[in-house]
Amino acid sequence: MSRLEIGAVASATALCRLAPLGAALLDAARLRVAWLRAMLAAVVLTLGVEATSATPPAPPPPVGPLPPDILASLEAERLLLFGGTDLWRAGGFLHGGFAWAPEGLDRDGPLLRLLVGTGVYQYRSGRRLVVAGQVLGALTSGWVFRRGAFTAVVHGGLGVQDHATRPLDPGNPLRGLHIGLRFGVETWWEPAPDIMVAVAATWSSIGQGFGLQAAAGWRVLEPVYGGFYVGPEVQIYGDETYRQLRTGLHLTAWKLGPYQWSGGVGWTMDTDDRSGPYVRFGVLTKM
Image 1 (tube, rainbow, N blue to C red):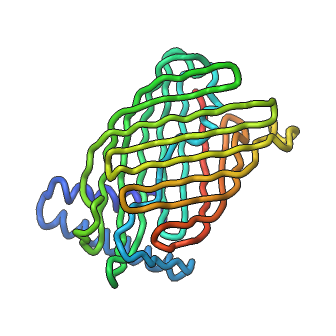
Image 2 (image 1 turned 90 degrees about the horizontal axis):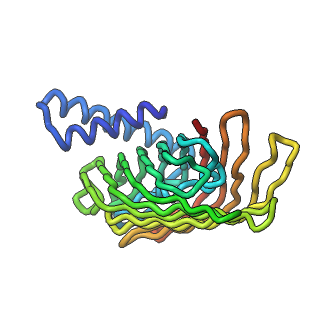
């Protein structure tokens, strides 16, 4: 399924919920959601994906804390664009946004960040397989702190999420439109020229959602476009009723021309007994 198709489905669902414009629009949205469900079922059969949760779970985190390579790239430019994707056993997500620092990204000062994302996830409610779509956005402001080889960003603001389920699942507490507060902190430390340590956390008042990330890395293959960091990573996500743990390996800050790439692969475990692999990719560029 293409990114445009996922975005079209999520947009149609949100519009139908928030502003019904007549039977024709509702019918079109139902057809799109039914098509999405059919496509997801085909993907499930192809990849052998099976949702087994007995209660409606929170979705896996489409957008947790900022990827660590963003802090590694805070230089004299004022604008940084970023995006990425996250795939695992029961869902897939896309996100993108920008970070803008009027004083420059290489010094202490204010920072404004816009984040948008969309995706789909699935779970079982009783005997029913429920397919859900999600659209989210967050606008936060904060401050960049730089002390030698240590960088930190603290930010907070508003977040919005819209979840739609097919079939209708009133038991999912995230279903519908929600607006709440969002806070986060990201840190990047280079204790030695070829070593990095990154720790990040985020929290949202929507469902009491949270995310924690920690990663360490060593720079390798220096002759290949300046090298990149590789090492272990641990991530924990959840809300009031759900927890997810990820352990894996990451590749961070691989510069290819004007773009910088990151990625991670590993294993996911959650409180709904849906263990399986995950993979994520990210890219950023500065202006």
